Length: 122
Image 1 (tube, one colour):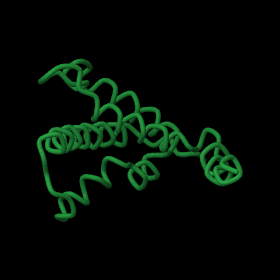
Image 2: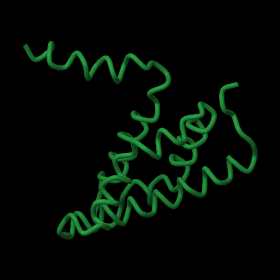
Image 3: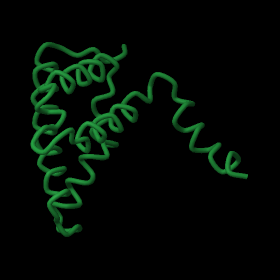
């Protein structure tokens, strides 16, 4: 019964093949922002902007930047919070701070890549 209910979801994710990388990258960035290794030590402190830059490069080369912007879970959570939809606590504040920093890093990376040229499918 469960597999029958998950079939449409599986088809929507896996049916797109390589065109669904923006969804996977959104999930990776969500995990990147939620992981905390020790107090004050998160993934951004450990890896810097390199992970974000690599993902943005691949999304840019595949022409999926706008799909990523549309479906990014972190961006949705940040927008809901900024609209006043969620009360803040310490854990949420740390997460939202990481999301805001990552969003700025993504925007800078995409701006740099778009200045270098488009890799859209022709």
